[in-house]
Image (cartoon, rainbow, N blue to C red; front, side, top):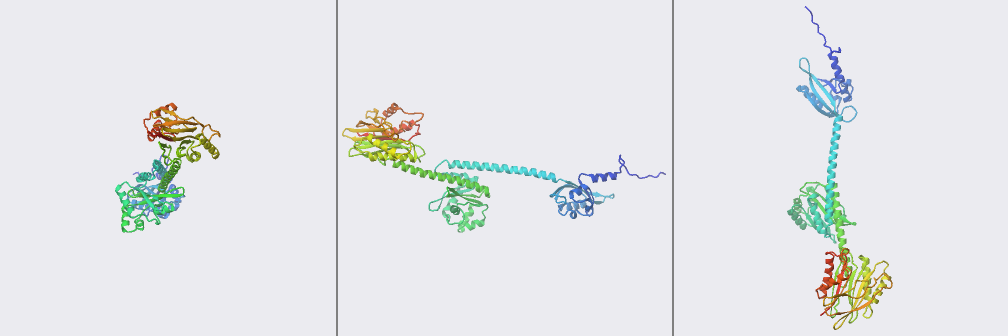
Length: 576
């Protein structure tokens, strides 16, 4: 009988299977280990030793917790679970600190039971893959995406805020009625930046006057108005609008707690009303311009449950700054307009004198923004018992400098004119005064008429210093120029000025006007002398006031409703 001999199976290269498996274990590019039933290391390859930062021999006989105390405790728990259940755990990720240099490691593991020949579980096998760099790369990508998302949201928010401020600025520029403008801005702020928006202006006595309150719900606006009227702000309060008005410094309340409401309430009823408003966050910012606080804007978040931060405060302060500039400009404009109107009124007679047998009327139409003094003027005054002077003129330019020349011309003419002094001499004296007292190049045109009423008509003597010639409108509808042209005043020492006489009979009218009448449509449409006379001949009115209105309307129509120069008209009509 032949005896069978057991031999080891060999590979084609002649190596036994055990040696091949050992080579695979040691040379694997991933960590591998075998732990016994006490979960102590029995076999560890070089790759796992590298991952753990501990030599191979230092692993043997030690548990994971003993070897790596800073490793995720879930590792030991998972090892115990596989050992007890016999169920493998695949693709389980742990994060923890090994002894290898660097930060915490991300480890992807597979844990499986190792069974003996009898099928009993002798321990667990572990395969470990270091995925730290992969996770870092994924984290960097996620962070880059998040940064991009945040940057995009910030850019979109910045663009929305810029559009908001642009829209607010457009509203602020629409009107010089700053209270109406502030009401529009408060409605714009709700709900873009606030659920509530209230604007208070500081009065001259230091009190706060509520200009507007805005909310999307009109019923709540009424509630806030009632609250404000029943509980006006304490001007000595240490916080809120009164304090901001006094100090000029903003206040922000990211979260309004019930304790804050209780601290600011005056009584139980007041506290109940404060709670009813549902305030959650608030900003109170000053409206300051030129170093002065003009008012306060309060922004309140309620229903939207937003919480204000530094960026919101910057936006609110910028809106308040622009509102303050608009208010300040409106006030400056109003003050300048008032000064201009007052100065302009001082350059015109407050009323026209009563002249026997003569009806006087005048029209004055300034152009521009209304805050700049024009150079046109007229005057009428008594020279003696039976003689009156009527003058009309135009000074080059506008503004205070032109007003100074206008005052010089008008009051010099009034001071030196008398019944016995010819008009040509009066205008030459005015010319001398201008040359003596003015250092600039401004000049003036003046038409000066002396009127002496008689039984049947009026004798008129006309002197003209570079001014458009007066027109005589006869009772029969005919029209003609009166006088001769002269030299501008304030230009040369010896101006050429003439005295010319004309007779006015009953129903006749003398029309004096500035160049704003024939040149109203400049530069596209100008009236030459013949066109102007023809236009005056078409006047059907036969009293001074109606004639003056007609000449003014003639100029306005010529300009298409918008004259480009001041218009002054004086009419002396001989009564029937």
